[in-house]
Image (tube, rainbow, N blue to C red; front, side, top):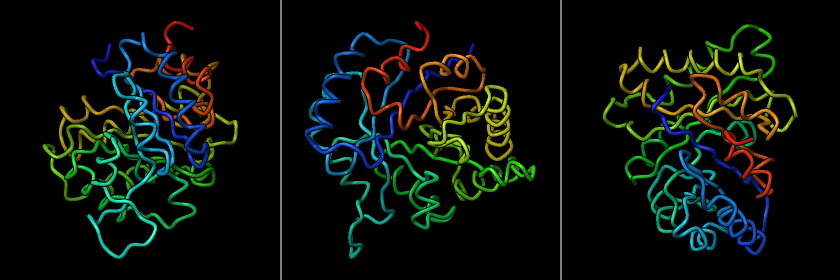
Length: 254
């Protein structure tokens, strides 16, 4: 049995105005107040962060952001710094999500710089990696993950990364309704953990939480969570409805 506390994280993406976000956060706070043995995080849009952060005070739910810039300040129109996220109440930040890579030019190099900036600001990075469908069909899954992990964590040492969270999100399973089988998820997570041991050491590999993301729903979450190297879920669509999301958080009781 792993000593790693499961984390169920909700990425709201570009959904919910401030008022809607507050209502959802208040509902979720009520639903999960009695949750134990599991960590919870939600990542609203930038414009709702501060308001949602106020709602979450005193609750077991952590506030996360969906992205950030690697510089502390400057002429970067439309960007948000790590310090701004901390000021809004964030303790975690999603970095390198496949949608950022696919639509907004995110690279392994920018991911690396963002992870460094997040750690310097005492934000926990949720570092996203994953292969596309064509890469999986070509048998390149492990080589893609290897490259993303090595480049994303380049020039870090073990002591830097104590709070790192990794999210394995097969791109072909995000928002498609397709989910990796629990065996596929376990195989990928085991590979990632082995890679962390190779690059850093056994302690970091054993303590780092690796989340699965990709069409996680109440009817498949428990099977995924039974896998020894699956330490939680990064949830998109199913996190938008507090009642549905709370079922994921109470996965052991379903």
